[in-house]
Image 1 (cartoon, rainbow, N blue to C red):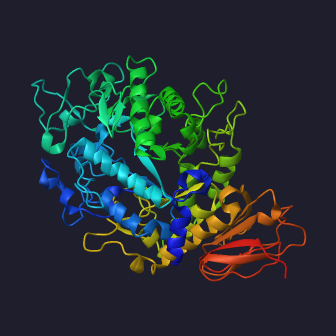
Image 2 (cartoon, helix red, strand yellow; image 1 turned 30 degrees about the horizontal axis):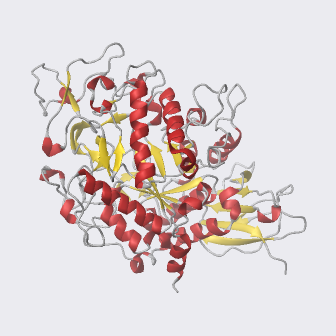
Image 3 (cartoon, helix red, strand yellow; image 1 turned 30 degrees about the vertical axis):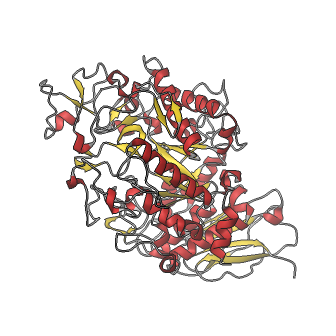
Length: 623
């Protein structure tokens, strides 16, 4: 039997039995993965100008869909790579076009412009199932396809994490700047108005442009979906539930409250203030909606978008009520958030409730480790043979484990969640994404440097998260180091190049990630070990050699490992190190290269790595 099939059989049906620390997440922008069903590229009534048949214009739809992901699942693509969880961009029905987002006309291909929270976007779904059965027309059929996709992933032993936006809806209403009651779509000030801290824009009016799916936010009331009564109230379609305060260009980085009150560009900010008249209704509406996805559809977790733009008390209420609603099933789910900030205190605060330390229970299960991402990129993301210092990465990791508030609380809440794991154990480690920080590999970044970056993501503490295309070192050749852009939102396989395992397994980076995923599966320290820095560049000398050496210690020293990353152009070796009980007395260590040339056995007090390589040292078996 083929190894890939053995792995798939071994994982099938046991996804929920795994600890979240065992997972390797693959973040995929569904529209940019693979167009498995061209028939849905221009849904009925949709403006055909929104589709880009050439799949090159990043502001239009490229056709990627659930069928494209299903074909990859069927082929064992993710199993072969070593991925165990798919985080997909929001699958819900979107507004399909906006007149103003980051300065111009764009489409809602990415999924973050919700029009209906309990419908799946018709750009993503098919008329027939993989087995050839017809789906019903409309909302019911689209939701059945989504449920079938989740079920197929689970059959392959792969969890599904659904991206969820609770901060805003899409551009569902317009600011009637001239007071004529007509949406003048060519006028910027009808899409965006200046932020006003006091008061709001009373002239805001629901839009109704069918070809852009620009309508009042849904669902509009109770629904029956997949045979289940969903007791939604329609509060998301009440305009008073929105702040209507307009947009401020610098609000995204503020900390004075403006960041939670302002619109997010042309998107419509929900009023989540605890003293707002709709607070409890909004919380309960989202609990009802996402209980449906987590329970009825079978989704395994939520990645919560734009966390710092929502009132903290709202997250307290949502996470607590959602866990209570799920009951025992909450132990199998994960709720992690995007706090786009490099300050570990800001990141960690959302793993605590806003009334901590009085209530030490968890708010979010964890967050994306932005502070570590920024530090790793500074170390690794340099053109040619250049490299930065690893001191920032070391400092970020020390802070992750030991940083604390003035009242003595750790930044990252150590109170276990329903699954017995705390926010530190479930921190999500990544080095690239779909937002402005862009792909790791841009112009001037070599494939080997890209591989080393993925190697650190897979060997450092936290749940590793790969960005789609990382496995083939997908390059954003239009961007360069030091600039923000969304140019990396490329289609992975165009319509005439469907993913085939035979082709992909020959790619050097695909094989490197395979080896890294196997190392995580077979070496417990890479999943559950702590962090202990051992060597950073050339110790105390001013000449950096590119070495970053750290241990993942375990309670049983025989299970501990040491990881050596060498960015330099020459083989480098550390000086003697005091391992202080890290390995058993008298043990020797053996190096195993997962990226680069083969490692060799080393003396226990020093470590080396060939040029541009990543080596894992384990306690060697007795002779």
